[in-house]
Length: 233
Image 1 (spheres, rainbow, N blue to C red):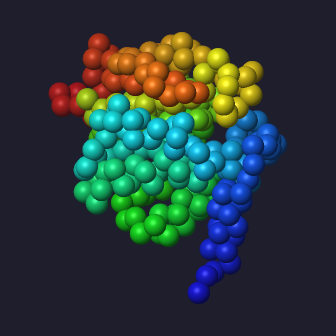
Image 2 (cartoon, rainbow, N blue to C red; image 1 turned 180 degrees about the vertical axis):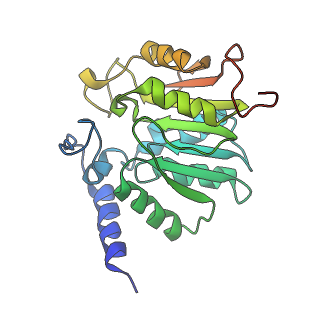
């Protein structure tokens, strides 16, 4: 028997499947004006997204494998979360973070519906995703333009990575074409690289296999001071 909350989440996910390419509504009562609302999730989950987002290739670039512990920061309704969960398998763990509770509710419903038991939802803040330590990889997809203080966010992400962990940031190029946010809201890859460097991360690769987006892969800057959770500190 469905609860009222389940029925609401069904309506959200049906709306996701049916929504067309319209401009996102503005979350006037939220701290960042570009934040996606649950009603706009159709923009993130079109039926052709797998074709142009290439999730398997992205996960390969981050060395995500069976047993990995990974985080999906700004997870929305969990489109990438469920794919990460299938990749890492029952021996792995996925931490799906978002700052909006309706998004986390939608993820909880989605993973229950798909029978996945290796996903934890994590309520974060715009500056700190509150991730657990010791992660093999963190993925930030299609949300960078919404982040009010990216250096703070990336500093907290860096603190959650294992010494050889990887961070992948996927976002829209400024060359245009295809889906995505308006051109004047897009962030150049060079700006992301500068923010990451300020947060103690170093660029490992700038992947160009995506049609409309860039993928930047970062690791911890080994020249940075040892973190408090490392041996000898």
